[in-house]
Image 1 (tube, one colour):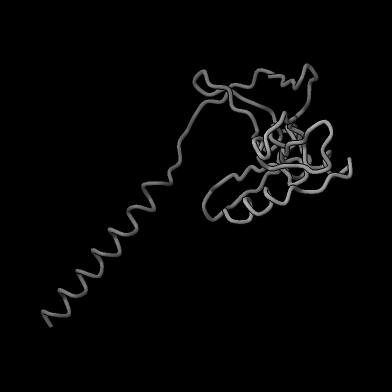
Image 2 (cartoon, one colour; image 1 turned 45 degrees about the horizontal axis):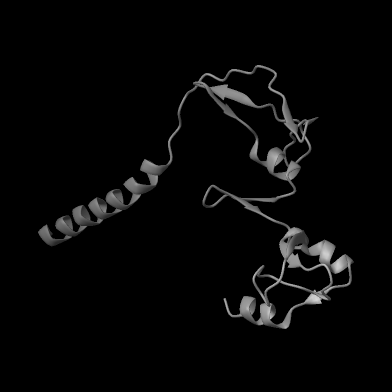
Length: 147
C-alpha cells in the first residue's frame, strides 16, 4: 500500500511540474487600450487594415506603444500571412513569385546569387524575370538545390 501511495504522489508531482511550464507561458493580462483614430500610410497612401474576414481592424495604443494589426500591414506590404494556432505563431513569408532574383542588362538567365559569374546585377522579383522570358542559371539552381 505504501508503494502505491508513493507512486501516486510521484506521478502527481511529475504531472504538475510538466504542466507548470505550459501555464507559465500563457497568461491573461488586463490593459487599457487607447483608440486615437490612428492612420496608417504606405508610400504616402493611407490604407485601412483588415482581418482575414475583410473586417476593418483599428490600431491602438497600450502604455505608449502603438500596436498595428500584423495581417493588415503585412498584406499591404505584399507578404503572405499564416496563423499557426497550436504554437501561437504568425508566419510571414514573401510570395514565391515576388522573391528576389538577379539579372544583367544583356543576360538570358536569372540568378539567385548576385555574385554568380561576376558582372553587374539588378535585383528584380522572380515574376519580372519570368515575364522577361529569362530562365534560371544552371550554376545557381544547383547551388540553391544543395542547401
